[in-house]
Image 1 (cartoon, helix red, strand yellow):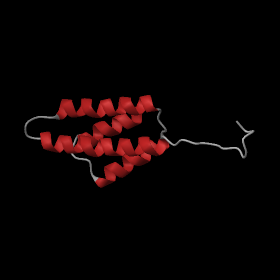
Image 2 (image 1 turned 60 degrees about the vertical axis):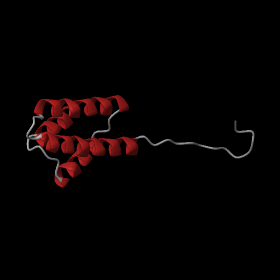
Image 3 (image 1 turned 180 degrees about the vertical axis):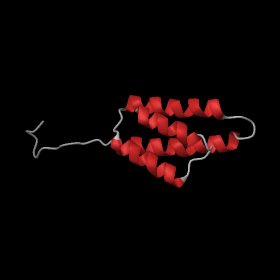
Image 4 (image 1 turned 90 degrees about the vertical axis):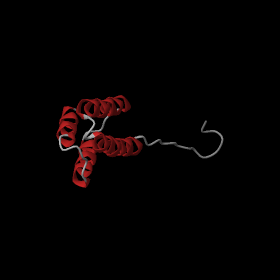
Length: 94
């Protein structure tokens, strides 16, 4: 998780989330499976970083960074939240 937070700090420094940065973040998330609570913490960290960095001149760029980063996190969440159902044949399997 610390590696992800460090990467987010690095990513926001230029006030944009490039395609390469999105790909790298996706890869890091794939390598580091996170619980739903950890993903929520990471989303809070994204907003915290944006709040620290935002000012009148870069606000639009920071908000775009937040949007891009959140989209990657949401994709990671939806990919990791797979449900499985198993059915047995007949009525006796209940």
